[in-house]
Length: 29
Image 1: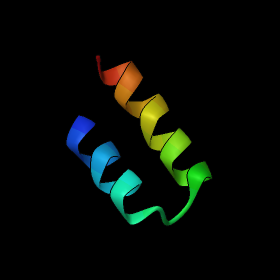
Image 2: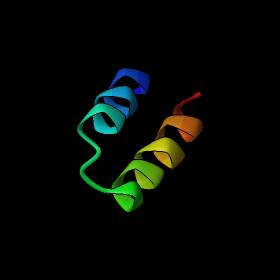
Image 3: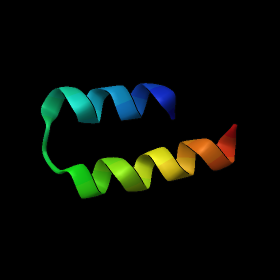
């Protein structure tokens, strides 16, 4: 999931989506 977050940041599609992914990654860790 960490990689997914990095890809999202590179694309810069939406900060809201990135925040949600970060939250999921945090739970995974």
